[in-house]
Amino acid sequence: MGASTRRKRPTQSDVARRAGVSVGIVSSVINNRQYGNIRISEATRQRVMEAVRELGYAPNLAARGLAGGSNRLVGVFTFQRLFPLANEDFFHEFLVGIEEAAEEAGYNLLLLTAAKDAAGRRSLFPQGTNGMQLADGGVLIGWDERVEEIRRLADEGFPFVYLGRHDIAGLELSYVAADYEGATRRLTEAVLTHGRRPAYVDVVDHIESVPGRQAGFRAAMLAAGREPLMLALPADAADSEYAELIERGRGLGVDCLIAENARTASSLERAVRGSGSDVQVIGLGGAPDDEEGAALSGLAIPRREMGREAVRLLLCLLDDPQSAPVRSTLPCEIRVPH
Image 1 (tube, rainbow, N blue to C red):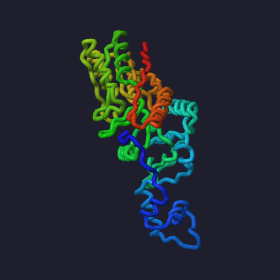
Image 2 (spheres, rainbow, N blue to C red):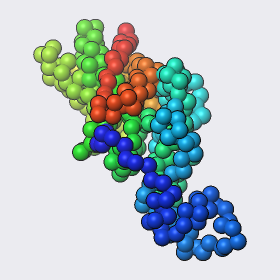
Image 3 (cartoon, rainbow, N blue to C red):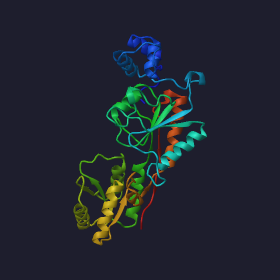
Image 4 (spheres, rainbow, N blue to C red):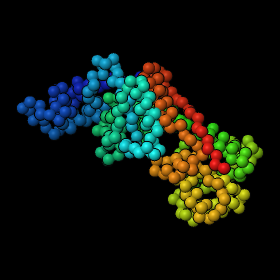
């Protein structure tokens, strides 16, 4: 997590000293109230807010110190919109697992759903301060993370666990991940056992969204004495390009296409149906906005278990900050269509 112990929470007195004003004025500015009969100038208000941002101050509304240093709150934050969720949504089971584990441990959830910066983007630091400070620690979900905010959260020593493997240079993050590499290897081995001739399909210049899947495919093929065949699609491929890839694969003797993501898998499946060919399509993961592709997935991700495990790891961090980073990898079930 970058830092092993949490920094001392700044107080209103710290803000007052930094801004060169009284604690009463700081309280009035933060709570947007009048300070007696004295009018607080805009310049003073801005100076106070600048000190708030510089110190990372957040109101200690729950009087943490009086409760043994804990509010029994787990923060849940995502850089993309997730709430509310339909039962079919890709992220739903993760959140069910988080809620179950938190409830069993006697913790409430603090969902950050309106935390935005001045530009209107989801932010861990709305108004310049950590939006999860009321929580004892946090679980981060989703893609499109803002690396600078993750670094700042780690530098502040705030305990958090990422749901999904995330590698950021210079940071030792705590996370719970699915074993995509092992599952993809087992899936590829099963495909070969059924006499299929597979190829791996990905998008040109695409950074592998979940590390390990390509490695699992390559390992299975090499172990079977087969050359790993990788087929690439251009970004934003047209329908005709999916059809061309299928024909190119058939010319190489391929009768099974293993696609890294659900969107590619569903587009390939439509092209296969349109061509009337018997090429098998298998995806390696669902997506929050593509349930058709998720249905084609050859991997069953243990989403509820991962949510529960994220809370367990976070509680380990809260009990022993020196244990960071804490990590866990859970196995996936494979589904091989016949």
